[in-house]
Image 1 (cartoon, rainbow, N blue to C red):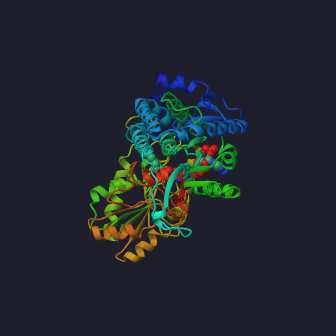
Image 2: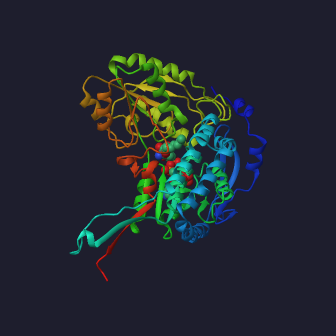
Image 3: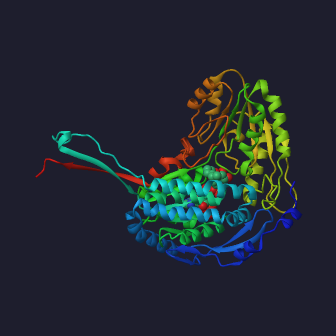
Length: 505
Ligand SMILES: NC(=O)C1=CN([C@@H]2O[C@H](COP(=O)(O)OP(=O)(O)OC[C@H]3O[C@@H](n4cnc5c(N)ncnc54)[C@H](OP(=O)(O)O)[C@@H]3O)[C@@H](O)[C@H]2O)C=CC1
Ligand SMILES: CCCCCC/C=C/C(=O)O
């Protein structure tokens, strides 16, 4: 269990302290300059509740300049060869790897996540994600289409398509895995030939500055990646409405996703949305419980539950309900809760007091609605926004815990019997559709379930299997479009069809 002294023991390194003490600017073109907005953002360490740095928000004028820099850079970047773009992106990937430990420490300081996890995601995921898209930059091919039109036969026509970058992208990212979230937006957009203005999350602006520096060090041309800071409803909303921006890519809550869609209705900007989730994790009686039980716990408690693909609705066949509940409680008790900088921590604090308040409200609502508490990790005392893993059984589809995204380490368990149709209707009784997994040794049942679950991603004996190559995104109110994989770059391209009359003199 965490206490204040743990956070004091595992303090920041000298290098991190030196970085935190610096002035933290925005990146416009090639210059890191301090924002001119009215708001001074105080960045807090969620493990200690101490303010660790201050970042001045960007002003409307800063935003205009960032968009102008991106528009100017678009001319060159969009016309550069895929090989030239790839070369810079590959250098950028190497630099992410080189500085992974430094990035991970700052990520843990601003967001609270365990250092082992921040290091692993930057080294093991971010660099390879950039490399994957660097490879795709050289493969953005159109097609030739045998077609007849306007009285011309196919032999007299040459019809082909070209893939063109959509233009200047406004990217808005959340705080839950800040470095990965920035990289998720940057890599496919850069590969496509787009330029960006990215707004960091108000709670986690520091890592965005380090990533932007690495981009310039890699030789990224000025203006291709611009970084602004500030509040979502101020500078975020202004970015969404800016006439110089061609597309918005957003990861965050479904509520803000809907606001963005309303905001772009005046100019019909393109929009990609990666929103919330309430993903099912389904354990059949023939599942390998030794694997399924700890996996179910981590599917929900990973990142303290602050991730969109968390398996927060656990469906367990009634025949194995009691051993699963017992195993979950044992696993939850084993997970060490503490400050992220402690290398043995498995569950860090939540990102903010506000987030902790939201999560505890869900815990209270579950109890009030009659769910049965089977494991209460509790709320550790002392500073830090800690909430330990909490498990409720006897959850029914109508309860808030089964319907609303908690974004905290709170698992709701629902029992099911032998009626697969009833199970499927309970699984799909949600407005979300992001991820999910089924755990069974019966592969026919697994494939039937995978087809019938209405979500963008389903795992069989694995949950939230993320890889740069595999498309990821949501159905229904979990979002629009896909990130990762080839579809990830498609989101930043538009297709032009060219028809040539070969018979014309
Ligand atoms: N799908 C996911 O991965 C995520 C889901 N969530 C869900 O959202 C809940 C609330 O978290 P929260 O941080 O408030 O998430 P938000 O959706 O509010 O924030 C995500 C990003 O959008 C920005 N933003 C907020 N309002 C606007 C707006 N009107 N126009 C443009 N940008 C805007 C935010 O800025 P600012 O930083 O200033 O708030 C932030 O950069 C969580 O409990 C969780 O359920 C949250 C984060 C990620
Ligand atoms: C390796 C971490 C990358 C996470 C990407 C998936 C998005 C999750 C989220 O939005 O919470």
